[in-house]
Length: 365
Length: 240
Image (cartoon, each protein chain N blue to C red):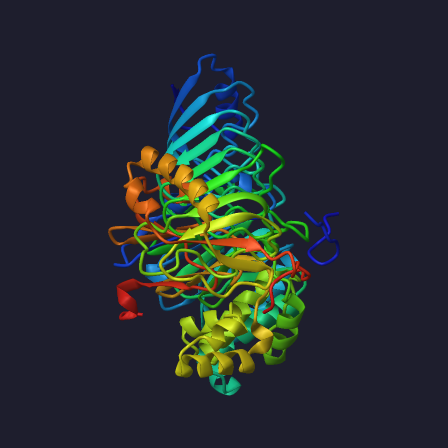
């Protein structure tokens, strides 16, 4: 039997790629699959995944839940829970095609839902918090069920396998989105399993991550005080919850969140102008436990934008390029050139320097 | 002449090794790693495109020229030969380099020349036309790093924490401003005549290759960074 995350440690890199149209133009999923395939050597076949934004325009006001089930009993239990809390407008299996390198797939279902007004009112929560609570409840309480995507007009597709095979398996050429992220996994501590593949998602926040964070336990202890449950025992999950907590709940702008998770060193803070210095001291003081140490390069996907960030020591590579309305981000330049041979303004962001790209400058979102 | 389109790293490197002649031109390179590694005889390899990580790793004798940008860790543990890049290069350029010459027309990423070393006549050299990122010469144990800062004359062309853990070799920096903020095991000094000769030699090689104004570059102010023998490195990593 395959041991899951946390039951075994395999001491043993990863690939990330992302693209976004600043005009909100929808780009076919095959582009991001091609990009990540040029970094094949960065993965080892134990996990691949994608997040697409703007892919469900026909259901754009409904939460799209993508769910893995180990068996039909976990599906039935989950569906009973969904029926009690949500109006399920549409449900179906997520279309896949048989692929020789993708095996042992769980049941993979998709639900377009909206919270039942009576339940929502009774919960005295805002809508997003209600959805988060329900997702955490399913993932924690229902054995064998895992909601791995829960945002509006977006979706995560992930599996055990090389990312190019995973893209083929999920027929991503049938989806168009204004932004995409991708991940090729090379698990360093834990075995690969379907739920442990990236991206990790909560609501519309998704994270793809190359690296290994050494602050995981400190981050986990802090974030679990606010109702999150790190039940996958893998480091990337906690990054997703940190962004949800700081951005959605604490209303911190993304630039400030970068200064929390990849905080400037104290000696650099001492050299800053007074106002900035005080702000940095405040952020580091308030959210000391959310400093993420160890190597990482991540791409955060969210409704209407992407953000790329390296750890402050820059122990992982990341390249950004652009052409016309599209901004490309990848672990390697080759992955950008693969889909945009004449990409311009290629540059490598510094450690801790966030790159934030928003559709229409963030105005419409 | 090799067309690298749709060749993976194994196929491409096998082809390179099977070429009998001295000169190889490779077109459409896109992300294939380890190009030039393990080539035993002296060859000149011209690359058009974007070669993958660890270009020229363990390089012996060969001369590699890239018409484009290079990715991470080029010249990893290279022994001899040269790598010339008509563009920029990524992180860990010249990682643990043991000999030979790397010339980058543009800039390099973080950790250039990390842990490069020298032994008698084996003295590696990295020349960077533009700027270098943080941690340049981290754990440097030997060899020469020369940063020219062309186009960045209004600032110091190297990042923070350069020379962290340095205990050998030298870093020359062309700058009007005295570089600051070094860990205690690094000394910043003015260059003497001996240094000027070394700088001139490698500036001329750079200028010849990339068609730069050698005299202007030579007649500039340079600082040198060397390890402070009285204050050896004692810490595992930087303070945070």
